[in-house]
Length: 320
Image (cartoon, rainbow, N blue to C red; front, side, top):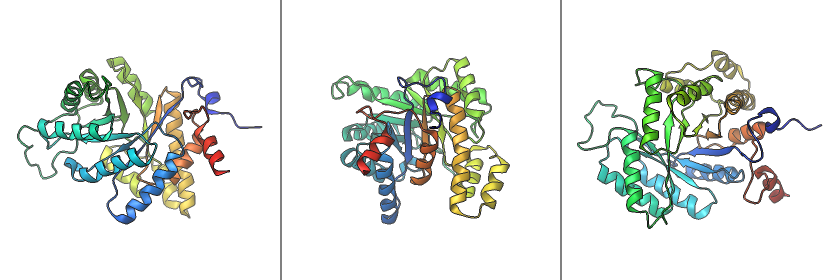
């Protein structure tokens, strides 16, 4: 007897409403890292994701490498890139030029982010944008000027959302007000930062909907297979990871056991988000494919390729 599908276990899902799937990648820092990344890209491509987001460093420190990766994704793969763009440290004129460059390459999705503040406490560049809301409005102005070139099409603008209080925020309620302001400025969807507890996505969704946020909020999950990485992300987000997870990862006897422990924990997070009504899953891959594919296998998301065949079935057909 075959195991129940996700449609059976998640009554809010059906064949007519497939779950969106996306990944995050970052530009390689060395030739060896590039080789590993492209192995990951080819493996992830077989799952037919809806898009892959491409990050770049603080203040665009490796923007050229990111743009090169985006170009290759567009030219050499079937993947659709969502380009990260931060505004701290850049003037509107500089950012408008970057947005135009991205559109010229064929990008039609931008993740609009504030970016990290200068760590040395230096004053912002004179005239630079300060908030993601300002960047969204700039993207929409560039879009309007390029309406004819885009065939009157629309750029998909994503933003960040926080299941727990942003480290610089006075409260979770303030974070929701910021998300609402981003929506008013023209955001189309949001992707959450990493979270560690199964109730956190549902809590965010409840608070956001009560405040008037109507855009899709996609949970971002990371395969929790590395104790060091989990602890570091806990420090960055200000949220303490589950102590029992850290203990189990620390006591694991092998990488394979850590993979199983971490993937199972991430499945629980994704499963709870889907039960709460999540429209998709965004996986922070750290440019590694094994744990992401293990996660997908266990979730069995109801998805279709353009031909109407499940991506995993299509991959098996190609391999046979």
